[in-house]
Length: 91
Image 1 (cartoon, rainbow, N blue to C red):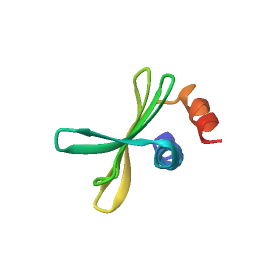
Image 2: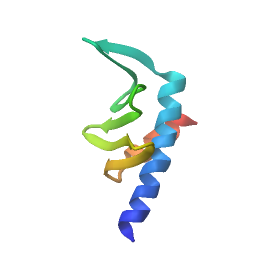
Image 3: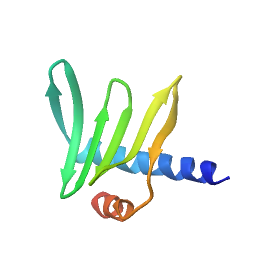
């Protein structure tokens, strides 16, 4: 049950983080890879548009979501103060 709740929360945060990085982020190219990134203080959000992979970092990686077979899959989620920071940034 906790896993289901965590997955739902992680996907809600994915959508929020995605909206922030799409609205406020900038494109970064490293070699042949290009991703979009948003940074503010200790919060960093990166999305790879070609794959839909998204990572959120706040001192360490706190969220990672991949697109697999057309569906989003939460790979890493750590609850914490970063969630309130993300809410503030999105407001």
